[in-house]
Length: 195
Length: 176
Image (cartoon, rainbow over all chains, first blue to last red; front, top):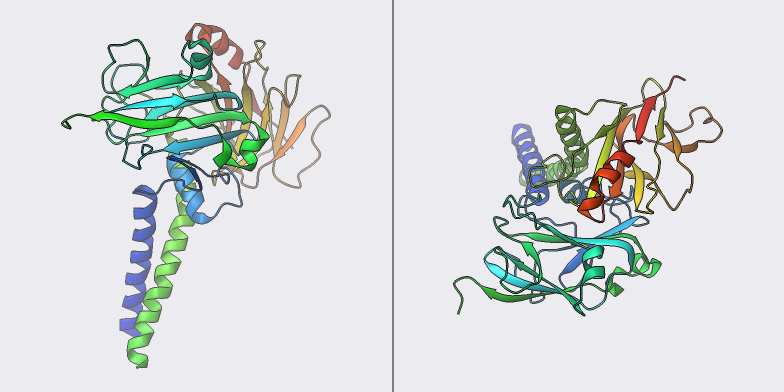
């Protein structure tokens, strides 16, 4: 019986470790508070975060600042909950600028790094919004540059990508209630192969 | 009954233990891997390294910002504290110095608006000797970790100036 118990414990240990690794290195996002497709976690960088949150942050947002300095919103889906992917064209609309000292919106490929595509169109920042004649400012996310003049972020070679909205020194109301932040809408316009 | 229950209970308990241990081990492992990559890119313990601007070829740390210049200083406090110094941007651009312990916790951050003058940060273990006058104290719960200097570059035309300014960031090991 003791041999059987020992083997069962070893198998349990291995399964528990494998499950944790699968969770962290698989689909686990940082999670936390959600507003539309945007998610943030106020425990980023905080020693009091749970083991699951800390592992997810280490995997997806290593060396992020804590909420007193910056808040990071991440989106992997559009307003309808559909996974963001390279084959589709999206419009991101800023009804209002995020209330922060500085902000940026960056597109990351499915490996969590900037997409390797040579387009040099990985991000949009507060300075673009300041220079924009549009109201609200819109950004097109597509694998190739749109014909009409618009701000463009390239999803070429990004696969199933993610968007990160960084707010540096955000207004105190956002730190207190991230869901109340003015976050851009992410709308899918079309997808390759769809009518 | 006992013959069946004992292996099942052992498997469940061991499963929970394996899950918990792995989750707690993961942040430190990822941090050490990232620091190894930085060291292979030229970073030296207790010395500042000014990383090149972020491009799609940057692969050391996940989700880097292409609009921020980063300088790093991997630290080891086993032989003594670390003095961290920098000058803030004259343009009023955001810059900050943040400290991370070896378990990825952001244990200290100071930005340009927190302190008008050039910062001098004395980083040491908790309960160490008093820091020199004129320095700001930061304590790391782990001997090793990383100091990160961030400087936002609002426009690519500002890059040369921003790059020159952030090179004022330095860290120097001190003796106890």
